[in-house]
Image (cartoon, rainbow, N blue to C red; front, side, top):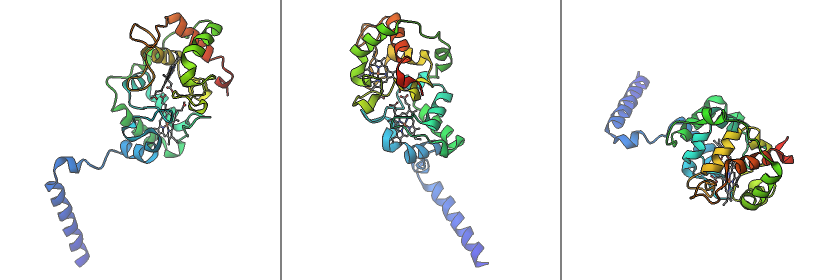
Length: 217
Ligand code: HEC
Ligand code: HEC
């Protein structure tokens, strides 16, 4: 009966230590989503998912989390973005990916507005004009064909299928209007914006992006 005595002693010690440790130390083992983020994502997206210029975007800025539905985040993590540095993580399984999404959403400043944003009307505009705005304003960061970091830019691959096929026009429109705080993606509408594009001009750009050859796969 010596074995069971040891077990009792160990359990008693564990309970005793847990009761004695300060509360922050008891909470130290992070939640499942944070642990999985650290194991799988931190190498590129950095500690606290703040991102790294020209390498991986921030996953915690409030604007990204406000425009992203849970479905979009789950699909982006599961499928990655083909042709970019974002690999697929389907092997983690749905519940692990869900836990990571929950962890990321804990950085949100308010509820997701994705339902309303994704229901916005599709962009209507002139792709030729959109190209002019894109080449003048966006291409330095996002690459001449929207291939992002691969073109040496600091912005993501917004001209490629992996992005365009999974986001709504409302997602793109809202991002262009309001930018993403604490990143190089500034707002492009309003007096404080990097440029003051009209709604029409923003739609011209979205229509242009969707005509790029790399937008199809
Ligand atoms: C090898 C580096 C790498 C790893 C590891 C990685 N990512 Fe990414 N991730 C990227 C890059 C690069 C992009 C931007 C791709 C592009 O240009 O569109 C990205 C984009 C994303 C986006 C879209 C963000 C946006 O602004 O729309 C999400 C969400 C994301 N990653 C989540 C994750 C999660 C969660 C993990 C871990 C399970 C992960 N990533 C692991 C490199 C990585
Ligand atoms: C000064 C550089 C810069 C300029 C100019 C710029 N962007 Fe961005 N953009 C970025 C960066 C950087 C990100 C990703 C934020 C991050 O790194 O966390 C981004 C993100 C985006 C996203 C979200 C992509 C995603 O993966 O979720 C869209 C859409 C976008 N930009 C569109 C545009 C358009 C359209 C223009 C031109 C009107 C433009 N950007 C001009 C740097 C720039």
